[in-house]
Image (cartoon, rainbow, N blue to C red; front, top):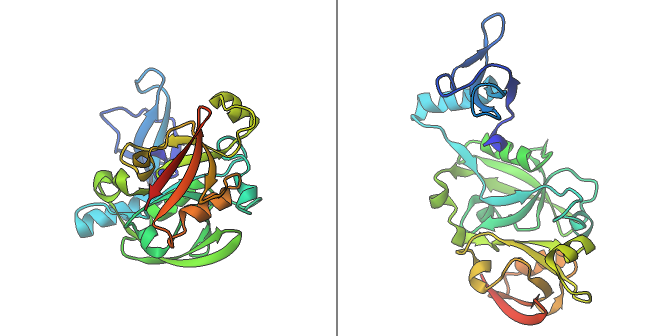
Length: 275
């Protein structure tokens, strides 16, 4: 929830009786809408948070004009690229060192992002000229865009800057707009550092990209047979040490599937990931 708005911190007591009430300053003007509280005991003693009134105005206008609130939807899974596990070395491989933005880890087939040509591995820098500072910032920007409106996205793809025109959709019920079976590829990977090698108990001499998580049993990656802890040794017959090569293979639509060789507990297994 906290990724969708930049909350105002308040010491107002917020509980089940007054959440949704007005946060006002000394002159009586509404500056926010009291929303939730982080409380160690579950009561009203803790740190309260309110939606800034500028963020709430769009929702109020939606209620008046449409009878419901509409949030913009892009259809991607995103991450920050901090130089810590599991994304150690990603910025260097993707040639985005020193850049602020958000990495697209996966896309939903049939989503606005997919229709616009956004791809896993794209690093989003700007939207309509506005800098994207982080993953959460991208979520906030997109959430505030009107459904059906078209916007200019600036991304770094394979080390080169590109501009794409993206028509924003409506963020609706997650099970309807983003079923896990449409998430491509449906797994996360990490560069195999010494720390991860030790944690995942990967034998010395085995090198490649570590599968960190398989998102859901219905995703293409899960159905193909990937498991957390697999080490991707090759992708489409090429070494899988560089993250950029991994994303290039995922995005190569000239092939109906992506072929992998993974090392699982010392045994090499061939896996075909169907598009």
